[in-house]
Length: 193
Image 1 (cartoon, rainbow, N blue to C red):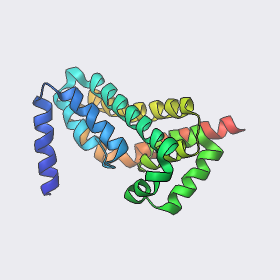
Image 2 (cartoon, rainbow, N blue to C red):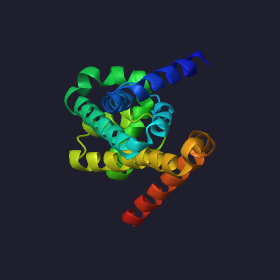
Image 3 (cartoon, one colour):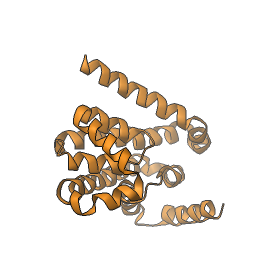
C-alpha cells in the first residue's frame, strides 16, 4: 500500500510538472531497459489529468520504449558476453533466455511483436534479438508496433472512458492482452502458411 501511495504522489508531481513529457519518455526508457514494472500505473492517471496531451503522452512513451529497446538490442549485440548474464539474472533466468533465443532465431519479427504486447519482461527479447544478431530493422518495426498498440491503446481507453478508464483497464487488462496477443498470433500463423 505504501508503494501505491508513493507512486500516486510522484504521478501527481509529474502531472503538474512542465517536464511531464520528458519525464514520461525517460520513465518509458527505464521501464523497457532496467525497471520491469508496468508503466500503466503512471500513464493512465497522467493521461486522465492531461487529456489535452493524451496522444502526445502515448507517443513519447512509445519513443522512450523504442530508444530503450535500441539500448537493449545494442547490449545484446555488442556486450552480451560481458553483461548478458547479469541482465538475464536480473529480469529472468538462463533457461528462459535460451528458449527466447531459440524462438528469436525461428520466429523473429512475430516473436518480438508478441513479447512487446504480452506482460513479459521485454528486456529478455531485446537482449536475445541483439545476441542472435536479428535484423535491427525488423526488431524496431516489431517494437514500434507492439508498444504503440500498448500505449495508444491506453490513450484510446482514456479518450473514450474518461475518468472510468483506470477501473476499466484494471477489470479488462488480462482479456485485452489475451485478445491482442491472439490477433498477433493469428497474423503470425497466416503469414507462416
